[in-house]
Image (tube, rainbow, N blue to C red; front, side, top):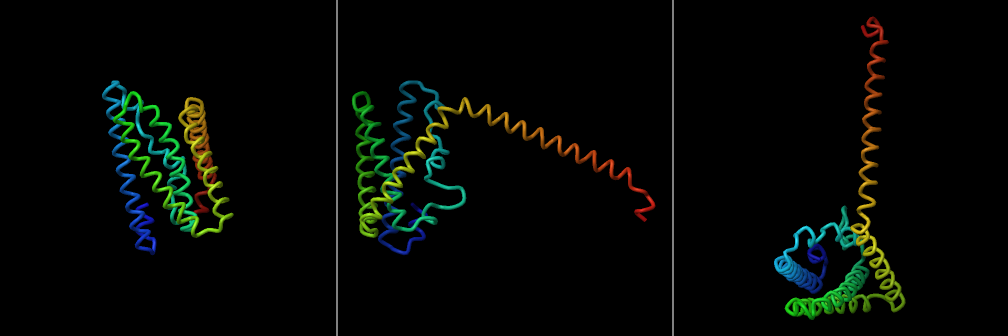
Length: 204
């Protein structure tokens, strides 16, 4: 959002992206506070209740070589933001319902975040509606929600099935390293044999 605010050629949109960024920083602070309170109260190991930074990559929110805003047109970027804000809103509602009875203070904090998420989705999708045809808007929104759904399934499954895939990955890496070592060793021996067969007089 900060990158979008920096490069977009529209002051009103830039201000909106900055406000959105500030809201997200605020949300992070609230979530961190809730997490720390739960860890302290229930004596939970921090590693068992920690945020996983790689999820923002696995869920398609960032890329290694570019910003999303660089690859999407402004209209499509608005749909991306709006669709994912709606998805986040639904997840937060489910999360807050778990907290409502036993952690009313946390429930109240989540309600404040929900108001921001609802506003983000409303503004983004309103912009997208005004700058896309009716059918184009509907198709793009459905596509973005579907892609996001599968990205979330993929990211969440990484932790659940890591006990299966991690040993396989380690085995593959060891196997590749052994092959590489063998090839390097074979090349070294071959080079030595070649040097032995060279006539000294042929070099002069």
